[in-house]
Length: 442
Ligand code: SAM
Ligand code: SF4
Ligand code: F3S
Image (cartoon, rainbow, N blue to C red; front, side, top):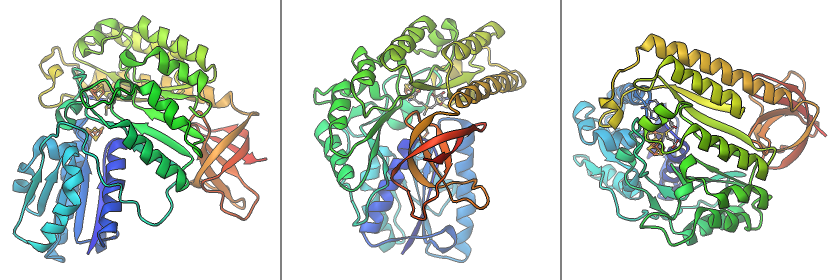
């Protein structure tokens, strides 16, 4: 049977979909484009309203395939599945499986049962007490040079705007021995860069599922694995970024000079109402210490505009903080109410036109900072881990795309006829584009 996976949401969902794909392949199923598939898996995100609505439109479109493929069915996983549950199959009868993150490990077997029992429907929505370890399901083939390894699930922070703790459950750290075993296996199969994933990696090991290994200790253990040339991690909560993790940026050469450190807002009053448990001064101290440890560190962030009660002065403080920190990139969002979160009850809500106006001013500032940071790279040399062919090739010249240690996208001309994907290439930066660099291999 042929299956097709559609993934929304964060890197953790991408990692979950990759695992599900590998497991189904190991069980004899074949990945296929949408028009050839009988089984559809939609891995969903409910962090904002837009991705949730997108899920419903995709489920509507996929349900249409039932006209030509009578046996087709849909499995819905991830955060919308957890949030909406079996109501999904009331609205879309072709949905026959709903599973949350903790149900993922059992999803391949459930899909197998559904193919054998056409009247069956399965719901896998229970949260587990400990990290649900999965069979890694490695196929024979090699792995990409950049690999992602999940080190924890869930979140205990309950930031006032955020649905994640409700749909991903309580924080559960994975055993460090299992994390290290997966990293070693990936390195042995050709991975050169590993990104450790979790909603809040800085508090790794601090929950009941932890085995006493701190996040800083885990970082040095992963960095010590033969073949791991680059190490990254995401996402970090500023309140839990420990001095030991900051020191790791100075001590571990494999740890890339890149950190995504969500600020959310620059006003202390807004940060307090968001329940973020740090203030602007505390955030600036972290930035100072990070730059002391690693002067070339590139910082990126998440920002929310229009949180309930945000005044013009509050918003101005966000702009001031963004400029002062000098983020190299940022993801900016308009606040939107999510079902059941604390901020749903906070007033006054900010009208859409004001949110949109603030968002466009913030986007312009972030773009400007990024352009300046990229322009400062021209004339330098950098090492690029090649991801594949450039998406915007220059006519006549073979060109490739990858990332430098700071996470910047670099397109470059490469004279050789061989495919450099998965290797490190030294590149001279010749030009800065709006969101990327351009150069040539030296
Ligand atoms: N765990 C990460 C953290 O603590 O920053 C990421 C959380 S979420 C998956 C990614 C981003 O979505 C958040 O950092 C926040 O900026 C944004 N976000 C979450 N809930 C939101 C909401 N209700 N409205 C707008 N943006 C939201
Ligand atoms: Fe959401 Fe806050 Fe947890 Fe991040 S730390 S996932 S923003 S509740
Ligand atoms: Fe979205 Fe769930 Fe990730 S809400 S951002 S897919 S944790």
